[in-house]
Image (cartoon, rainbow, N blue to C red; front, side, top):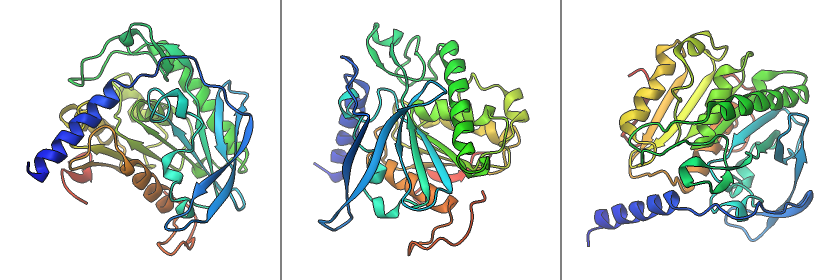
Amino acid sequence: SSPGYLRTACQCIMTKRLASEEFCGPAPRRQAVEQFMLPGSRSRKRTPVRRSFVQLRCGLEVYEVRPEREHEYTFIYMHALGGFHGGPKTITTPPRFFAMSQRWPKNMRLVVPMAPWRAMTFADGREMYAWFDYLSTSGGRHQDPIDESHLLHMRKSLHELISQEADLISGDHTRIFLGGMSQGCCMGLDAFVHYPQPLGGFCGLAGFVMDSTSEAVIRRSAQKETKIALFNGCNDRICRQAWVRPANQRLAAGGFDQVSNHFEKYVCHALGGWEQWWILEFVREMCQISSDGEDTGSSQGASDCGSQKVAD
């Protein structure tokens, strides 16, 4: 067997595993506040980090990690359909982009809102963590129809969350960054484009601009001069490059001038370590942290298939 064949076989297995992931069952019990340990890179030493689940005024339950230093930035990350990888049983484990905790900006607060636990039409009523319901599934051939009433409700809640987070840093919305994975990326992009004040930036993984975000909304958006970094896999069979790239190009066509869309070779929908890598690179660039860990200033906002402006 050739290495290429083995790589393709592994990608197919990962894609099928993600598509058939079982997220049904009772919602997990969560501890209000607990201590957990993050592994250091190439070291047996573990760093204690304080995390907690809190219920905010916007109605969302959020997972938060407080910064080690003075709070200057906030990164709000929307998880994928079903929560974190592995379903509800792993919803309380730290996101994998903390595996390299020494690279996370020490002045950045992490906020991960939890999507509602809802029955999904496409899954014959099975319940899972989801930002909105899919009414049917095309198997990755095109965008799937959604329940837009769920989308509107979650957009309002996320806007309230963004406003609350901005209040913690003197109302400076340009120090608030959004991101998301898969359905979380789609939900985050929708909330980002509709938000009435300029934000710091957006990092989207394995997602796209949904058809429900109209050209008129894109043209009127306050985020036109804000950096948007989108990352997708060339071998993604759920969000396929053939229709994801044109969907994301709608941003540039609507006047967004700081949008990039990178498609990585051999990567499928289950991003693996790329999720951690892309998020860390994005937040460090936004906080202008150099490779040696020094903060070089305030925020302002490889292989090919490839990395390019979405207008290309």
